[in-house]
Length: 49
Image (cartoon, rainbow, N blue to C red):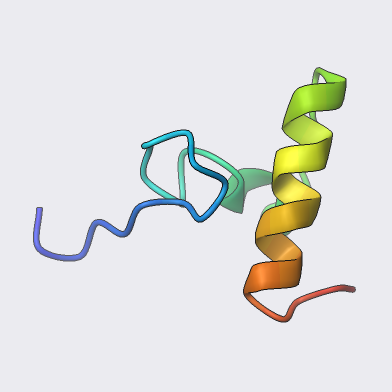
């Protein structure tokens, strides 16, 4: 579990299993909350595209 990084959105989940799937894997969020959390995370990570 050494490479696990918490997602900046505050959900206390691993980035890859949280917002990373929407930002990096082009999966569409299922709820408005997921969309806003992923947008915040992208902003924090300076990945606005």
